[in-house]
Length: 167
Image (cartoon, rainbow, N blue to C red; front, side, top):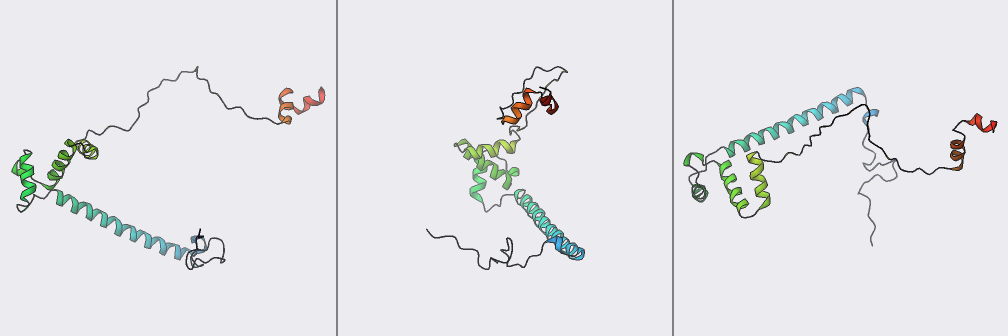
């Protein structure tokens, strides 16, 4: 069986864990100005990603709220066959209608989607109501711990080293 080869330019032998060829410098070895610049670049990249995700979410919502195009006769006919009015022919409703059809044909994941979309998803929270009194009848069992001979001697004398000398 062939052995795994190290990564190309893994930097083997250049120090502890130097797979980067020794080019990376940890933040604690950088100047405060360099750390500030790196943090700033990270913050800007994070803002760009957040904006992209926000725009994608907005676009998805716009598409879901769009009317099903008149050229999509097949979709419109299926929705009409399910009893949806002409005013309710949005893509979100088309998706929901398709999932209802799949769920009625036995697709469990489609059934979960419909259930969750309708707001009937089961709670995953556990509510615990308990009363605590001053005296409790709760017993806690601890595992047996193996003892060495010195501890056995301490136990016989009550753990008092001076008492050993008295006996």
